[in-house]
Image: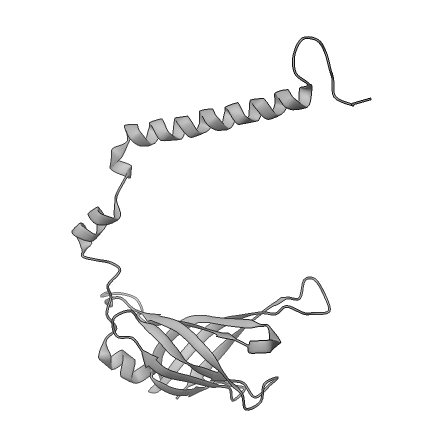
Length: 184
């Protein structure tokens, strides 16, 4: 026999619970909609933002920064980060990456982004850089997120990396994390 309570006074208990949950979700959604309509000051459209601040999607990269970043970089393990091109309008980075460990001599395609904002009068300022590498048949992907600056007159990119890999000995071991320092 079915374990649900089949009384003659209405639907089974499990069905009542599902119906109650659907009703509560509908009431919550309606409440949010009504609150949003009653408080239009909290609604800012993309067009309003662009009109107030200029088009925030457009942030051309300074040609000096492009010149400083394009080229070959080496990290502590002697990997080669080759930035071949940076699109001056979008900040899109293209290049290659060669690691002496695991894939000696092979260069893999690299793609990423560079972005910046005007320096403020206080605090520190860097050029933000991110890039990732798809390791072909190995199946892994590594992504670096960090910054570029001159450190002791040496062009330097410092990036936190995450390596995601499809095969490991343990279920908790698919993502590795570390930091690299690249110099020219």
